[in-house]
Image 1 (spheres, rainbow over the protein chains, first blue to last red):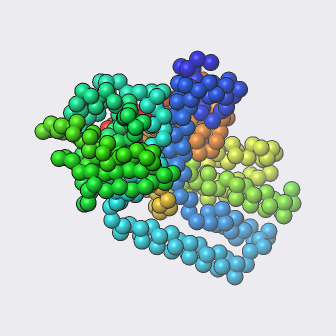
Image 2 (tube, each protein chain N blue to C red):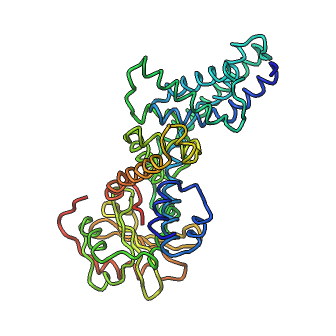
Image 3 (cartoon, chains in turn brown, red):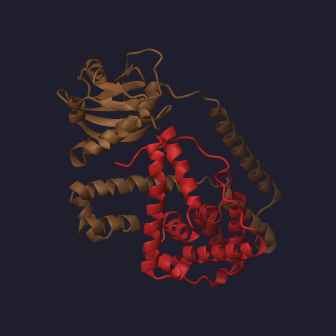
Length: 246
Length: 174
């Protein structure tokens, strides 16, 4: 099976794992990337389609049927009342939890970075070797965000893509540095109250955030990388253009 | 089949398929309340026709057929509902990250905006777990037509996500 056919199959019937599909998945490289992207999309799709079901739906169907067919019914009013009470309690709990969570304030930077890294940090890092961004793409992403990179920094960028930040669109970037590959998040509209600030994320990754002339910059790297020095060095290679389109 | 066996069989069907049928109904008609009615009506009809279900393995397809027919009948009686995401989801658990929630909401909106001929094969595949061949039988289409529709449905959803990624609402696909 060639790559095109494999991608077509992933778009058509991703769950149908024939021998050929399994073989293709196992080939690695472009096949593995296509499979990973498809898996991520399918997970998101399944999550989106999994809408909440009314509490006790099956019970209510069975109960209703029992009342329609009294001759075969084993149900009695005390049991009905108990189920009704359980359903009411479940609905009340769900309402409490939903309403109770709505009043929370915006995410703090550590939560945002931890969530962002957990979401796709390692995958984007892996894409730096297998699927690097073109120079045009890198320029496009940053120009949309109103930023220019120095030629030296531009040469270090391996992947550049748009990503959500606490306040709108930003950039998720993988850079090759003397200390190894690092992940950089540029957040054009977000500033941290105290900067620089550093956190340890899940899995032992270290991060440092600084404020810029416009927005802020976060660096996520393996423990041992001098993230503060690095993020400051990178910030000196950014310049800001007056207009942004996003 | 005696009454006890009948009831046991019915209860098992309700417990196994009610939730998925409800979700299928929601994405078919775009309305939470109507989907609930559809599922209740589906099981009422299933109870009446239970003796005609000879093969237990065919139960899922059989129930889907009943629900789709009931849906078609509903549209003979009612004006189609406005497909608004608020009609689809009434209350939900909040264990997802904000980014994942945004992506989920965008996908839901995009699903509702998909033409029914693309949406239905996709939900039969994703929500009900039917194979291409089973969907073809259910929709009375060729397998090739189902494959084309499933492909286009995914393509359209992904196209809808790209601007959202550019605007920073979700993560761009690498």
